[in-house]
Amino acid sequence: MIETGKIWMNGKLVPFKDAKVHVLTHALHYSTSIFEGIRCYDTPNGSAVFRLSEHVDRLFKSAKLYSMKMQYTKKEISDAILQTVKASGLKEAYIRPLAYYGYGTMGLTPTTNKVDMSIACWEWKMGESKAGKFSGAKCKVSSWMKIDSRSQPMQAKAASNYANAALARMEALENGFDEAIMLNSQGKVAEGSAENIFIIKDDVIQTPPLSAGGLEGITRDSIMQIIEENNGFVIERDLERDDLYTADEIFMTGTAAEVKSVTQIDKVKIGTGKMGSVTKALQKSYRDAVMGEDERFLPWLTFI
Ligand SMILES: Cc1ncc(COP(=O)(O)O)c(C=O)c1O
Image 1 (cartoon, rainbow, N blue to C red):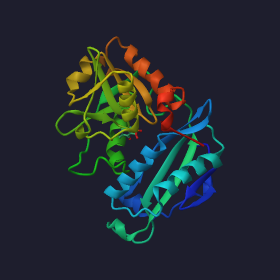
Image 2: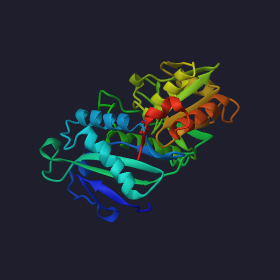
Image 3: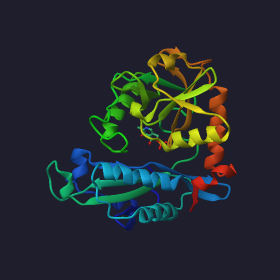
Image 4: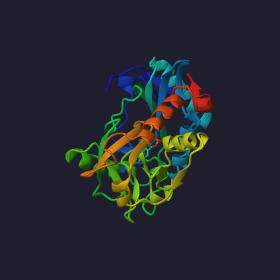
C-alpha cells in the first residue's frame, strides 16, 4: 500500500497512517460492516468518478439491510468522496467508503454501537486489475457454495459476504487459477468472487439473474446499458456449469476488474481460448464510457 493523501474518518480528513480503529471495534469481531468500491479515472477532461450516485445509493441500501443509522446524508457522503480524492492529489484512484459498527459495547448485538464511516483512496490505474488477469483469465468453479439470501441479504455489499468469496478466491489461486466462479445452492452460476459474469453463445449475450445470488453490480448494469444503447440485448437466465464450458466467449465485470475476458474454466478452453471479439468490443465501449469518450454516457461521470 502506497500511503497517499488523507483518509476521511467521521467527517475529518486525517493523515493516512493515523486512520486507526480500536481492536474492540464491533465490525472486526462480527463482520458488521458494509462498503463500496468506486473508481476515479483520469479522463481527457480531468479526473472523474464513475457512477458516484449509484455507488452511494448502493452503500445506503447495504446500510439499511444491516439496520445501520448513517450519521451522514447521501449528499454529504458524495461530497466527502470527492473531497478525499481531491485531497489525495491522485488523478486515478480506487475509492473505498466503509461504514461499520464501531467501538462501544462488546457483544453480538451491533445496534448499540455508533456507525462509523471512513473513505480511503489509493492509486489505481485504468486496466490495472488485482482481481486476476485483465484478459485471458483462467477460472476455477469453486468447491465453496455461494451463500444466499436465506442466510444473509445478498444485495448488501457487506464484509460478511466476502469470507465466502475470499475462500473461493484462495482456493482458485492455490490451484493455479486466476479467479473463482461460484455456483449457488441450486448448482446455478452466481458470479465470480468479486465480479459478475456474462457468457456469449451463438451471438447471444447472457448473464445470470440477480436471483442467482450475484451482487447487483454497477459495471454489470453499465455493460447492459451499453449493449442496449448499441441496439443489442442481454438475456438474464439461470446458467448451468455446462453453459460455461460450451460458451463461445465469457467475460466478467466489476469496478476493479472492469471487463475481463475468461479463456479457461477448470480444464476447459473457452471458445478459441483467446479473448473473443464481442468481449473486446465491450472492453473498448466500457473504456470509452469511463473515460468520457462516449457522449451518451457522460452523465455517469462526476468530475472532481
Ligand atoms: C461479489 C461481487 N460481485 C460483483 C461485483 C461487481 O460489482 P460492481 O460492478 O458494482 O463493482 C463485485 C465488486 O464489487 C463484488 O464484490
